[in-house]
Length: 252
Ligand code: FPP
Image 1 (tube, helix red, strand yellow):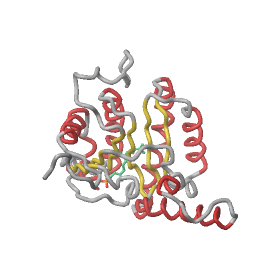
Image 2 (tube, helix red, strand yellow):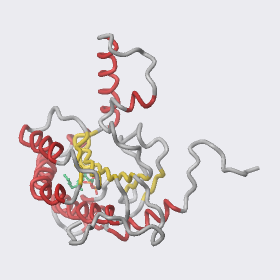
Image 3 (cartoon, helix red, strand yellow):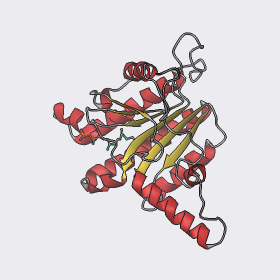
Image 4 (cartoon, rainbow, N blue to C red):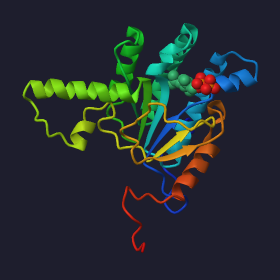
């Protein structure tokens, strides 16, 4: 999206297959990328931010409206403190450096995950980014930070329990009402979930929301990910048939 002419406008219909509305990515392999080059793991995370920038640009250009990326999990606290600090510093630097540009390009930024436990400077920066971009509608970038799906679901259940106790809601809560208690309230479910680095796991990411997502696992390490890999993923997505539990029309 750093390019000049309306970079978030999708390529005209007919020139490319329909893009999934919402793509979610587990950005994995930063550590292995760095180790293979005899670099510190932090170098892999730094290059991971570059890959994120490329992917945000490409996603907008390819007609995707929602991109959600997993950048720090509730389990990542188990990493050495220096690495945790690096990831926090990178989020801060990314928002500080890119907020103005993303805002001008019509990108709405959301951060999902636990706010409690974030250092106050990061929490206030995240609030600022969300507030300043809340009116944007061209593209939606959601960063999962200090996020775990089980934690998100538990917090939703606790909030519902509080509301029911207060007499505000009854217990016959529907799927859509439940979803409104999740951090992703207001976002469509992901259509395509990509994980890089050759691992075949969901790792506590969007467990509720990805119920019907197409899953795509690719070998590329996240710092090497770019537009061509995203295009490959969209091609694979377009070759699949999504049935949502139904049968193919006309099938015997
Ligand atoms: C997984 O690679 C990646 C992460 C835990 C962090 C993802 C973070 C970024 C892409 C950069 C930060 C971006 C922002 C916006 C903060 P890994 O370290 O588990 O790699 P490995 O499995 O090869 O060790």
